[in-house]
Length: 130
Image (cartoon, rainbow, N blue to C red; front, side, top):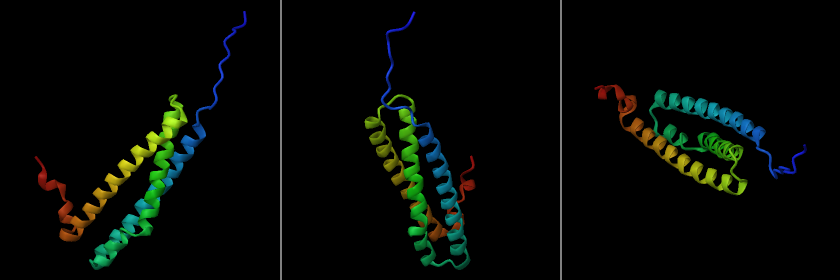
């Protein structure tokens, strides 16, 4: 007996896009980490506020934007895999990514200001040990 119900899916889930975004995000994350560590070591060596300005420059912002774009694509692809249409998945992913990226960047900037004011002791969380 043959079934008369034919399933037709306009879009197949973007598994490749999800995996590619994950790999791109990891690559951008490693670049962001390496650049951040290098700039922080330069700042620690001279304690110059100019080096902290470099922490907010294009050399650190470019990998961060790459991470953000990769997260947006990964999130939208994941939503599509779970059955959301692209017209809903992409706007949702973009809104969530922009909000998260803004708050993480703001927190990083505040940590850098605290680092400049009080050195690495300003970020020592062990003093709050309960």
